[in-house]
Image 1 (cartoon, one colour):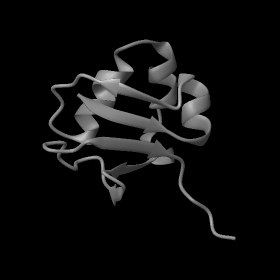
Image 2: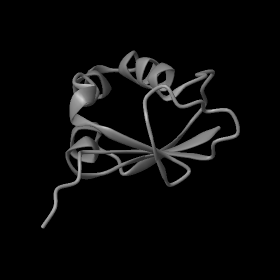
Image 3: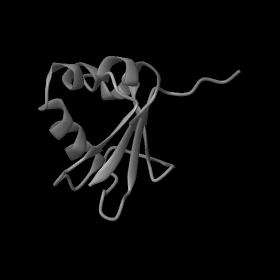
Image 4: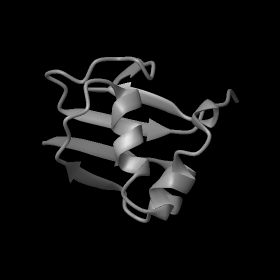
Length: 82
């Protein structure tokens, strides 16, 4: 079981701020594929991964990052300066 956290428009599209997910995914990319297969709201939220960033256990990561031993995955839009 892994905690998946959604921020900003990702949360708005999916409709929940966080959830626990049972997954067999080896990488973040695999997890996204599993989530997209759940229902349309996930497919919409993850349809353009170039508009997403991910953190594994609160450390910025890429989509090929392994999930083994991870407790939390967070998805959010790119941060802007200001």
